[in-house]
Figure 1 (cartoon, helix red, strand yellow):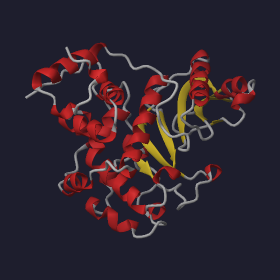
Figure 2 (cartoon, rainbow, N blue to C red):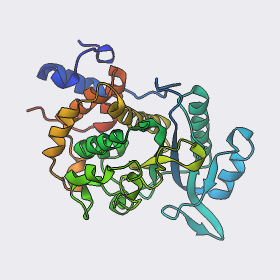
Figure 3 (tube, rainbow, N blue to C red):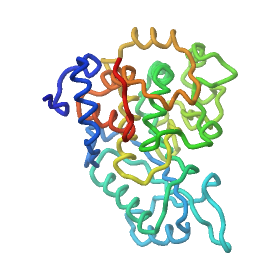
Figure 4 (cartoon, rainbow, N blue to C red):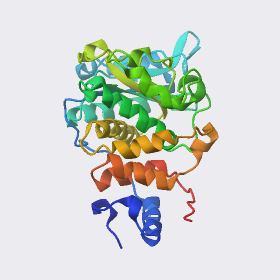
Length: 322
């Protein structure tokens, strides 16, 4: 029996029998909330946590009791808010820039606990948007080009992972977080041509409602208070801390991969140039081979790989190995 959490090899090269064993073990494996993810504290992130059913007033009142949350915003979100007798029900909680330190993860956990105590819920109208500080790409425009390429190649896998424990996307995802490859006014393989200068990402012909929103990207300015971020919008709403953390971990390490010496430019270019756009319904399918290749590329440890697969392969899903 293999100890997959300490496995040093490539999961994409497992034998069929070992792969079967891995899939069996994943059924009982549990994600755990961690104190840190092993990411440089210099990099920042901020999840927008949407919720329904709880009164916005009481969420704001509860968080205002603790000075630790004075910079956390509680606000309306038109996609999931409504009024009852003049009171706003639903909304979102947005933190300041967070970092991979135990205090920030504990604060996020505490916020989620408060929301649950106030009977907040997520529904098919809520989402989880994650902002990543643009300092992660440094001063090399090619990092952004490579990130867009990797995202396009694995977009169908990234979306399914981002659904969290859900089997499919929220119904209005096409309106709020269209896949990049669905851009109608430019060919996917022409995307790199739009990055001839560092100022071009914000000028992409995408509106902000694509899965990757670059409209908040401000060249190489790294001041977090300016909101200089790349926003990822395709995740379904959740109040489960381990799902939120696992999702953030993946997005961060996907971005870090394209900046690392391990980035396989030849492989990504080859896959990118062969890319065929899939229908959104096909994003619900499991592409195990592609998922294994993805985790082997971007993660340098087996724990991250197993955690990704646990969230990608949904509960009670039957995987056929051909």
